[in-house]
Image 1 (cartoon, rainbow, N blue to C red):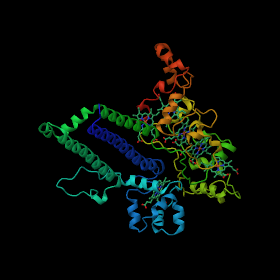
Image 2 (image 1 turned 180 degrees about the vertical axis):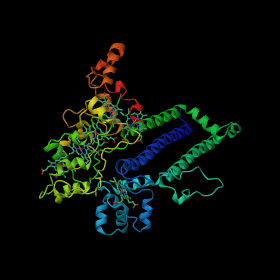
Image 3 (image 1 turned 120 degrees about the horizontal axis):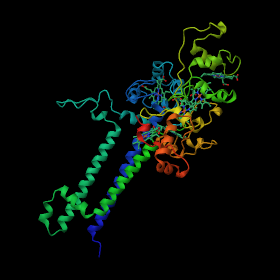
Image 4 (image 1 turned 180 degrees about the horizontal axis):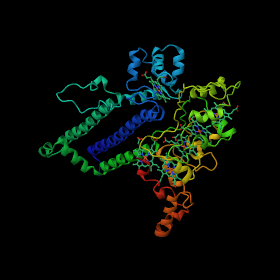
Length: 449
Ligand code: HEC
Ligand code: HEC
Ligand code: HEC
Ligand code: HEC
Ligand code: HEC
Ligand code: HEC
């Protein structure tokens, strides 16, 4: 049987339909992902879109720079604010720096211009939770509904939406015209509405429609899952710190135990960052006078309100100011992570997640999983450090040291399994171990509040 022109045209349309839907869904996903991901990974520690924190709110920061006549310099600011300030060509830079006296923004020299723009675009597209009131009655124009105020992102959605409608209409229209031209049942065809027309068309081509729907659904599901397991990649994140504190000198050369400074790591959820008093335990004596690092120790003294000239006792004044360390490893608020459970009960070494800190000469950074995998004794993982995929992957691979007497809770689970549920226990032990996931380490609620 010969394929008629109309059938060929139909095939063509189906192909376009398929390609377009796939293209649209991937394109918009990517666009969303970049700015949001970068913001969360690099800026969210200090900035929020709509609230001042360590740094100012970033919503429409570009407008403020444009208003100061320095619209182009904001990118330079983000990439290296110290350099921009030093260059003296930006008044805004010095103004905002003075406003936030004492806080220094990290430099992001590795960011590309487009990446900075994608961050600022994303921020500007975030609605303000405080003013996101229900639409006003009476047709008053709410601020922010002004077309000029519309973000670039919502424009893209509108354009995509319009394009989609146009395509649907065109497909319907062409089909109608062709039907009218070729059908001998003119009157019947003309009574059909677009909806009926579309349904009839979909039914007739159910194989193709079915396949394209399947493709779209699968790509969406895969996209969402990949997004979740890779969301927010923060590998290599290394904020600058107020004092050049080398772990290598303390935990390495001088062999100070991690727990001396991170003293809640075996007892509670968080490991804790030492206060200046902990530093003073040793640095009252170690001033580093004459050594290159003396100025760093002076910063400790300044924070503790200590004057070494007044002798070893009674030198404190009340003029203290806390050292503001920048947090390196950050999980979103909705994630629950507990150090003591991993370190004590699970028997996981700090190295597994943080790398070999005894070798760390510079500021702490989030070690990429490729580096972590090089360390002897570490379980080899593939998903980026601190992402959900990373947690999950380890929970599937790592066994739980059951019944080692270190934790009554797990000893009890162990006993119950052995005594009451022998089949389940044997099933778990088929691979010779009980993994974290088998005890519930893959349940959403274990990690999410
Ligand atoms: C370690 C904290 C910190 C991080 C991380 C950080 N900032 Fe900042 N940012 C600040 C502080 C503090 C200021 C205020 C100026 C100052 O004191 O240097 C600031 C100011 C700014 C300004 C100027 C705002 C205005 O109203 O003029 C922009 C823009 C900005 N940051 C963008 C970013 C972007 C984009 C990122 C992520 C790539 C980022 N910042 C990451 C702390 C931070
Ligand atoms: C003498 C005190 C001291 C000792 C000992 C020490 N640390 Fe730290 N640690 C600090 C301070 C101060 C910071 C914050 C500054 C920084 O992040 O560079 C820190 C930061 C960290 C961070 C990053 C925290 C964050 O914000 O995410 C990790 C991880 C860490 N330490 C792990 C270790 C491990 C593992 C050991 C043992 C091998 C260790 N530390 C030993 C003082 C210490
Ligand atoms: C299973 C992985 C894992 C292990 C093992 C681990 N950490 Fe962490 N650590 C994390 C994560 C994840 C965070 C971020 C926590 C957050 O933001 O809530 C973190 C944060 C930290 C911080 C920052 C402060 C805090 O509590 O948030 C320090 C300091 C730290 N870890 C030290 C240690 C030390 C010391 C050890 C070993 C005794 C250790 N960690 C073992 C994953 C781990
Ligand atoms: C248990 C003792 C001890 C504690 C606690 C301690 N330090 Fe030290 N620190 C030392 C020793 C020892 C040295 C090495 C001195 C030397 O080699 O001359 C040192 C060196 C340093 C240096 C210079 C490193 C270099 O070579 O560049 C800095 C900076 C420093 N410490 C900061 C801190 C800070 C900040 C804290 C608190 C978070 C702290 N230390 C806590 C013992 C300690
Ligand atoms: C290196 C391997 C490893 C990594 C990475 C890891 N975990 Fe775990 N996790 C374990 C082990 C081992 C246990 C079991 C400890 C125990 O017996 O309670 C555990 C237990 C847990 C539990 C308790 C589960 C239960 O059944 O009660 C939670 C919650 C948890 N982890 C959250 C996280 C989160 C969130 C992350 C990522 C930020 C993470 N873990 C990363 C190894 C890991
Ligand atoms: C072992 C711990 C763990 C388990 C189990 C887990 N998650 Fe997550 N999840 C995380 C971590 C950690 C993040 C944050 C990742 C990041 O910020 O990079 C996260 C992020 C997310 C996010 C993204 C939110 C955001 O930050 O934008 C969603 C949605 C989510 N998880 C849903 C789920 C669902 C649904 C399940 C159950 C099927 C689940 N999670 C099970 C650890 C876990």
